Length: 383
Image 1 (cartoon, rainbow, N blue to C red):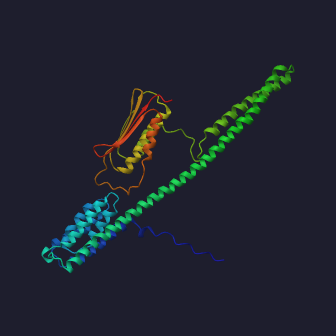
Image 2: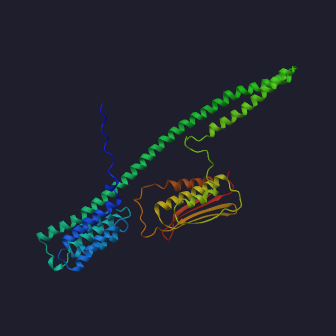
Image 3: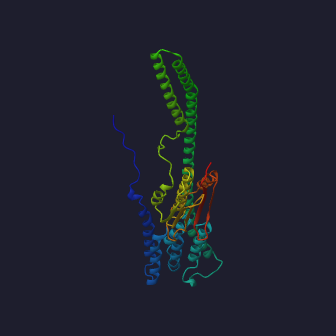
């Protein structure tokens, strides 16, 4: 029997490398500029070259790149550079719809009112109408494709979120069933086995008191001792069944405390300035865990929404209150961030609920400097 041929694998990395996708439009724009600028003045060639070179920055500064391509478009009939810039603006998740519309309109007007202006007299005739339609299509086409690409990425991200949510719900359902079964086993062991062993212990104790035979007395004492030991071990096992974590992959390790904050901050990958002075008071475990989770969630949000921004973490003990504050500034102007993913802010909601259950408060809001601050006020006494 012959062995079936292997299925074709994914495309080689060299065909889908990010640098190739970045350079390919630049090379096409350079070819377009070279063909159009043949025989043009040196300054026209320079403007066309600028329009081509700035495309390398289109993913970080798409609007600025578009503006720098317009002079070359105005003096030469180059199309690929400004069309690529319009596409980049539309596909950028940071760009609003009105920004995309304004950039596409600027390109269309620049293309219509071409230099020299004397070659394009304003008149309501057939030629101007057809040329206006052509300019609108040149600008609207890449804008529509960019918006489509952005929407496709957002839908893919939401689909991933929905898939993870369904997997999480299925896992929670399985965990609930397992927890119910564990609780039933614990009840059965407590109600049946513990009752029977208790009777054995009582009977052995009665025999030990009533008998005069030394051998029988010693045997009854041994039986009673074994029964008591069995009851203690049984109670421990029942407690394990009731309190055991449902997830099989959860390590049997202590929950994070205030002492774990330096490791969390060092491993965050952010420029963090920390001030950790919780005081000499011994805080309850639930309070320390809430403070740790607050810092963890705030650092995660800062890394996701303000990459590269400076972050300040303060954990201070003020009498009977533990104050936790995490503040991040605005992201750097030229910071590159990935397409934002859509979310509902459930992490902060969970932190606020955790603080309220402990008798404290938590606030999260934007700051006047363009950053974001999360502040928690947790009590020392927890019921």
